[in-house]
Image (cartoon, rainbow, N blue to C red; front, side):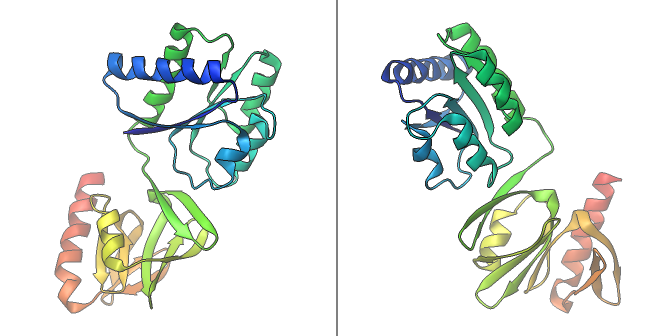
Length: 235
């Protein structure tokens, strides 16, 4: 399921884009979840990094597409933005906010398909995986490999990452379910460790970025098995 936001203030183009998306789904056997916004303020007012692709008109009445994209990039560096405009000079500016591409109006189905296919291909590239972490005052989208380990502290989870530490509500059980299949392993009931960042095991502790995380006796064998398996896969 690919989540797409259409941000456009002209009803004619909204209808056209929705029809193009419907036709594309049938032809390419894709499945889209689509939401329409009729101005830039609609998508930015409660944005939580919940879309994979944004089709954004640049010239809109209240908040233009460029301003909306700048706000979106403050919390989401990965969403694919494609601008839709009738003036190419506006489209060039789009690259300043990391737009993947632009489509000139009037929009032909052929051009639309080419641009959308490029965006979908980018989403399907292997390697990078992302998670959305709820934090105080909003959410943060992070690449999984940038998370070192997660610690359970009271009723919260603390994420230790490349960008620093972040506190989030949740349980260790829910975190373990969210990261299932992503090379994380429980060191004890209080730690979920990204095996990618384990430098070694010393004195019954996993060494992660210079920190020694105690491995409990009941979980030691399972953790060592997970670590050995991971190392054998990436050697």
